[in-house]
Image 1: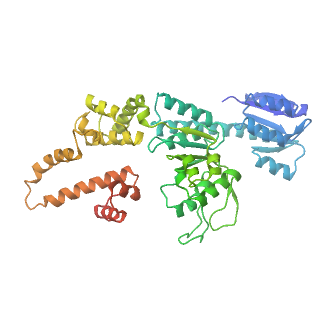
Image 2 (image 1 turned 120 degrees about the horizontal axis):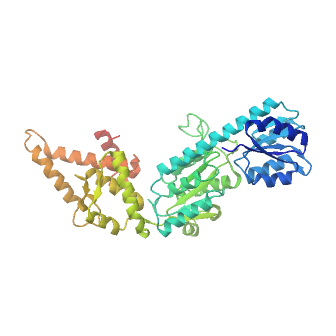
Image 3 (image 1 turned 45 degrees about the horizontal axis):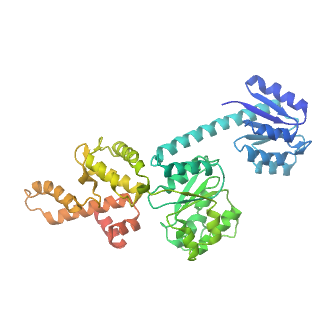
Length: 463
């Protein structure tokens, strides 16, 4: 890392002392004696800035605010002969790294500057690790189609600006991946990324999850709990399926976006939080506004920048890239061995309509890798509804023939109950895993009552 220091101080003797003390240690130092010229020098991105509190043409605290806007990654150390309690507190609140009083001890200055550069180095290392983590955890964001290239460009434009973003697209298109990409390419990348799905929680619980609550706020609130907003402080909060929020919660979210403050349940305390909000929906929010189910003022707050993700059927040229990735990922993670698609299987994947989008493609590839025998995935292994030549009935018959050949030789064996139990257990287990162990979604996919599902999970000891 370059060790570039900018001094903004009207005292030439102080500048001379600082240069004499730090330059022998490899620091590259430039100086300005006025705030205006100092702010222009900030645009050259120095790593550390030593800023005087009182300057001939301006207030150092105002300069600090301007620096935080121009170069938020720079570390600013306030230096002054006019130290007062309030100015010190204000400087630290405004983002100053440290505060040195003139005449300062040279050794103390060396220690503070050295620590600042060490922290900068750690910060950069963490940023690179998070960037690598993003690249590892979101490979589904592959594409060369015009629609996806536009999404990538929109992410690049929106990420650096600390504004609210609305992501729209059908279920399974990867809205959370876009939100993560915005976060990890923003100034908040070192802060937390917190996601919550408004459709996955009962409406009465969603508010407590977002805003937190005090002990005794409601039945079952046995201890204080921080909400997602507080957890996301200095980072990004991703609100998926925002159209599912009721009107009361919409009003509270609007207030938070406007004021950066909220009140936990069961409390009169106003809590501040510095959080960037990214919302997502698979519905037409303008229609929701028209029919009165979504607040117009909240819609305009969210819709500062909108990123629309195209469905997979509109980006056919991206399917081969995704297939290749999911085959490789499944082979590595599930240890299925290397798999390849037959010509017919590949043709079916390319012509299929993909109502479930990228998520459905991923699940189809994983399932085919697990269930297929040999290294080649045939058309019948895909189990797609569009493939009328091979049905679930055909699949079960083929598997059962192998199973029955051996089982009919076993005496005193209840074949009927055993087969039904194993098929039921396997079906519930697969769907339960695919819904991330969400019983409500699992019951919906299977088309059974949730209580029935819970009973079956207990019976088969499904985890």
